[in-house]
Length: 426
Image 1 (tube, rainbow, N blue to C red):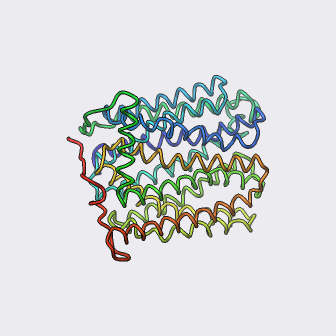
Image 2 (cartoon, rainbow, N blue to C red):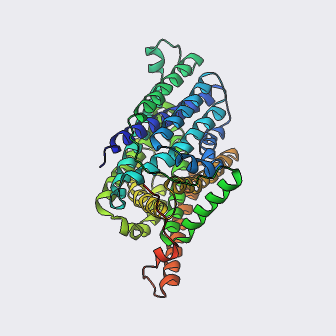
């Protein structure tokens, strides 16, 4: 890997660690103010809402300056959201600002990946990035759970767990993590890649974003990978809350313990990512699509069990399947994006589609909770939906292949369908 790869990975790890720790703390803050249960998944809704609302601008912003500097600025925005939470602002509002920082951070980190590395290293690089991100999810949920635990409150002399002082101490510790991430951003080198013709007016930003979206959707591989990653990110975000709620309801765990269950899924994702990096080359990424149907049965398998070790084993299997699946899809989408448009703009389009899916599915989950639908029924619906959706993606791929080549099962003229390639000048 290149010289800038290690600081990029380190900065991503620390920033994502803080994102996941502050999420658990925000859940505890909602509990302190006796917020209704549907507000918990709405934390994710407001967080990723920024990815959708500001998608037209964050990609262009990421391409206006060295991406390490963009990551530094956006980490500062996350830290500001943390300070608002520390000052007593409602957790939903403060977490929305953290989401704005994350929305602008993402095109920079993924765009820098495509600038630093050749296409044949993207699957391996994505495995590293996803693996470290998953490690940060694991440790972030664990750290967040520790920050809201009675042991943390007693250790710092902040009173009872869940008290105002104890939760303020937890938020302050999360802020320190953002400061550490910002410090590492200073070590990220400039790739030297520059993109000209940045739109400045809102109408120009809309048009540039629309062109990038249209180009990716016109490309067969870009379209299929965009559909797949959008579906999986929506499922994954919803599953994060389902797993926490399942741990509290079906397994009788306290929040600080239930918050660690998504970490089991995350470990599986890291394992699946490593396997994918070793076995799935970029030009064969779409060949793994049939495996997507397995997500539904794997989700259903955990319903009959209330044994913590058994549930953890099933969650681990879900994670392995997700990691094996999503890493090649991400690499394919990034490669097509940087081939067809600017790096930051392509990632912004990806974030828009994926997080629109997340918003839709998390909002649906919150609505179901508001209607007192049982958690088991939600899991069944989620499992059926993901299996049918993956079958639909496979059907679309086969149909597109037949239309493109006239022969069933043949590979399409994917590059031809994509239109003229566009590379940034070094």
